[in-house]
Amino acid sequence: MVDETNHSTHDHHKEKGMNNGGIVGGVYGMAFIGALIYYFTHAITFWAGVIGFIKALFWPAFLIYHLLEFLKM
Image (cartoon, rainbow, N blue to C red; front, side, top):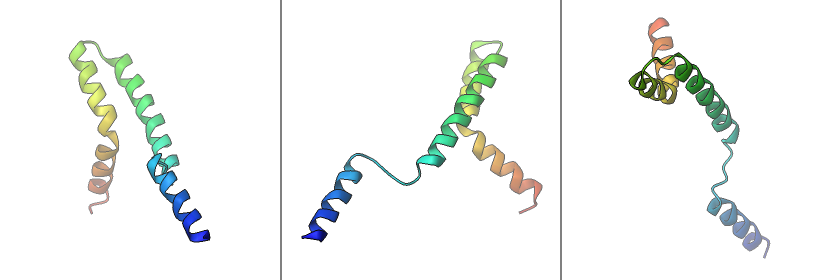
């Protein structure tokens, strides 16, 4: 009977979309908002704002790429 209760609770958490990686998502979300504000405030034209939005989405990939390039890996 204990197994059924634990299994039921596990399914309930899974249905609500809960996971253990919440802190990483929160940090990425805060960094995304910060980058978005930075790029939008420095955008002179509409298209510069669009490019800024794209950069704000993908800045971690650029960061890791350049870090690995710098470390010659």
